[in-house]
Image (cartoon, rainbow, N blue to C red; front, side, top):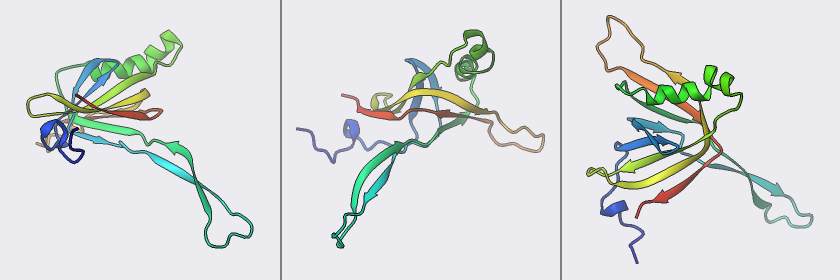
Length: 156
């Protein structure tokens, strides 16, 4: 039986090697992912005659938007996905294209270690780089998506 305290894949995973896929199509690697989070509301019930505590029950789960950012790359896969899910892509199809996204941590040898499958996702914001003749910093793009939650899977 594997040691539950051992790092995934025999190594301690780091948060700087991961890729993003949409419906099995690799969109690319990213430098930042924010919003892998689950919040559960707590419903309370006060029972008459019970003064020692208030009953607490799990309520509605909520999932914040996920924001991914990276340096600008040659691939158009990210922006193509945005276009299919909104604007002219949405107008020509007439139906919202919800997708399954996958955020996968990879090892230094590019082995898949752990994935979060993001359910019923679609992009709601893309931000390109800020451009200025006075700025010598790297160019970054950012994508924000909404979803109906995620599942986690450790690769074998």
